[in-house]
Amino acid sequence: MRLLVVEDEHRLAAALQKGLRAEGFEVDVAHDGLVGLGMALEQGYDAIVLDIMLPGLNGYRVCARLRAAGDLTPILMLTAKDGEYDEAEALDTGADDYLTKPFSYLVLVARLRALLRRAGRDEAARIEVGDLTILPAEHRCLRGHDEIDLTPREFAVLEVLARRSGEVVTKPEIIDEVWDLAYAGDLNVVEVHVSALRRKVDAPYGRHSLETVRGVGYRLVPDAP
Ligand code: CA
Image 1 (cartoon, rainbow, N blue to C red):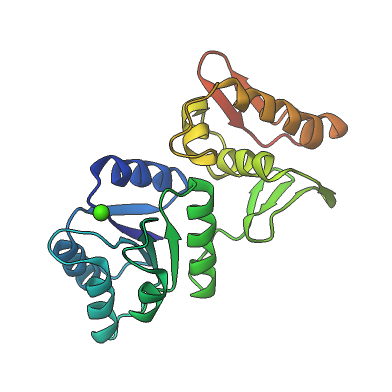
Image 2: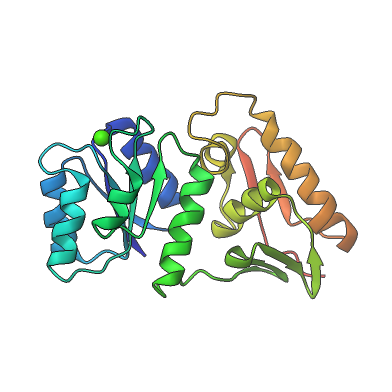
């Protein structure tokens, strides 16, 4: 899955790139509309996250030109809340969906996955770690054949760990991916969710798949019965 992020706010672009890479996407960034258009036409991405207010060429025009060139890559447009630019116009120019700034990272990823699914491009529809199965599209989690009920945040934390199973994922990385990009609260919120997950996906089955790596973070490993 290759994504292009066209966003001239460097901090936001970098945060999106980092977060989406952690989700397993390859992510290129352009900080200018004209550069972004060129990259999109040349490289053929699976989806594009496109800001509206851009130097070079604004997002509407980038989108319109791509469509005029017969390029149907799914586009998620980022619109500003002030209403100067409007969502209807984004969709009119050929965007597939839009998100109003400021947005939650969790929502952005969900919308992107929905776009990729509709385009038939999302391959990671099912993640298996031992006999733990995660179905992101359906928001379902199973241990063996048992359906496990998780809250949206618990599910998102588990999904982050599952996508990188076997690797240590740090608390700040989990925060970046699951909570709002601007989250400045207590990192212990991650611990609370991991504890809850252990009570649901491990303890009832006598497993220890959610490991704590002291001082670093967490790791999800296959733990056979
Ligand atoms: Ca902008």
